[in-house]
Length: 143
Picture 1 (cartoon, rainbow, N blue to C red):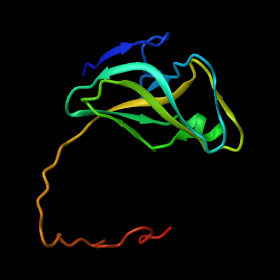
Picture 2: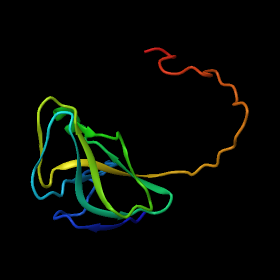
Picture 3: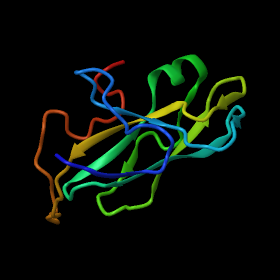
Picture 4: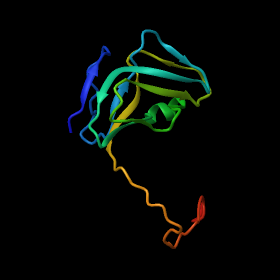
């Protein structure tokens, strides 16, 4: 799959770091460091613009090292870049840690994963088919 990209950052294009990598690291493209205090959120630009083919989305995911070491993660869990969006990719970070965190120019702040998706048509019905689980919800199968 080919994805058209405009790179207005001062860094090379995102790349897969290993042969088995699913995600491409995105870097902060900022003029000055950003101080992210505990429980604060910030929108961090990347300088990257994409044209994603129809039928695909770009998923923005947090970086595990930032989450484990500093409590830095995505405020919206996983972000979605729709195939018709043409604006700059910006990352919503939140500091769930106990200490201030500094984001510097070039820091790897998130991962980008491309996913194929299906569109659905709803069929409105009066009843759903029965299953063994039925309406059993959160925790119904144990801890």
